[in-house]
Image (cartoon, rainbow, N blue to C red):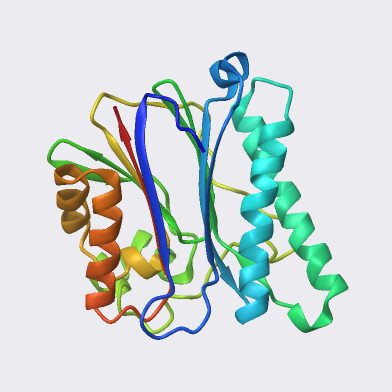
Amino acid sequence: MQIRPGIKLAGLSDVGCQRENNEDKLAYWEAPSDEEFARKGRLLSVADGMGGHEGGAEASRIAVETVEEIYRSANGSDIRAILLKAFQTAHQRILEYADAHPGLQGMGTTCTAVVLRGLDLYYAHIGDSRLYLAREEAIYRLTRDQSYVGKLVEQGIISTEEAGTHPQRHILTSALGAGAEVIPECPEEPLSLESADVLVLCTDGLWSLLAEADVQKVVMSKNPEDACKELVKMARDEGGPDNITVQVAQVD
């Protein structure tokens, strides 16, 4: 796809060193017409499926495809409302798919979706994939991990460093396809970006193995394509026990 000026973008998904199947998905979409692009901008997403080889892969596929479909076809201009509708629709579709395929009961997925409209950043998030903002010498995690270990960190029971190796770190407290309803994290107002800001969307197969300072150093010193390759290599060098997925978008 042709990417309009305004960002430099790259994405990479790798099966890792110990898995046979990749249950992660990533996607990018931008409005085709100038009029629609001014209204909707760009959509980036990552998802990390769970529920076994086929179930996890199907859940993450349904999530990114549904979010894109709902966002692409929406007529309104309330981006937050559209993202929330997209997540709710994806949740219902995953539940329906599992009902139609009894062998896939328990399938679900994380999902982090970002909309860039000019320098305004909107996002919706569920699960423990992450969205980072790297700016100059700092990196900020914009999303909260909706996981058992994430709650322990927020309550001060364990440290961020301990969370990375906690035996229950993969237990999610919220995911698309899990439970009767979902409440995505979706800020009321957009965040204003600055020139040279870098956004990083990634699954836990990446962030659980790399220090945030190292991620910041890589994305601020390399172009997005090289940064994706380097980050995946670093995660694989740490053993790569899970699928590894990352998207890097530099405000140009």
